Length: 211
Image 1 (tube, one colour):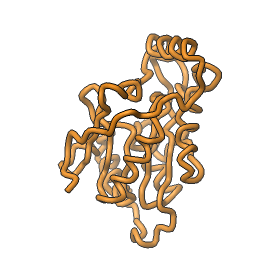
Image 2: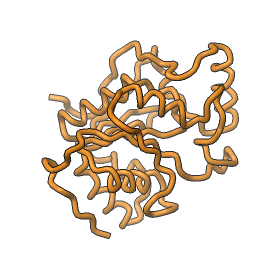
Image 3: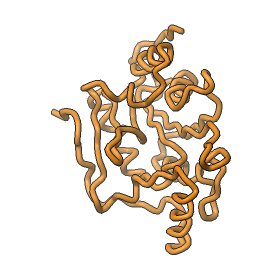
Image 4: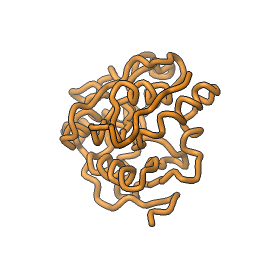
């Protein structure tokens, strides 16, 4: 399924932010985006932080061009629908990612024209910022039935960052009912609404050369 890309210089929109919110979670029993966390659906936490960047409308991707093929299919769908020089991808199950982290990833990806992603629990993944030129590689991976995000991020050119200990809350990923219960307890204790997190320390580069 070949994808024809416009030249980068013809992409008028500098950045686009997308929230991947499709798919049914087996462990949660429904779409994660609709789960309530405090006064808001889970997806709204990431949306509020992303919108505070004032980078234009944040798109929510709920139906993929290639159904049942995981997050890469959602990324392909978003990049085809909203061409931009740099795309930031968020997931609805990471509600505490700060707008500062989002902005840093987009800046690094734009400056170096490389994928910039986060590392959490030893894995590379979301959130991540990718140049529009990455779209062709995503299409090739999907054509080859390589649906894992790690397939995209495994190339040496990927820039990977990690949160420092003081900002570990940003990496919180809601994958199970137990995770959701803990997050709800935190919200009730703090009595706050997103964005809760204001990152304290710089991101640490754990893979790639920024020079």
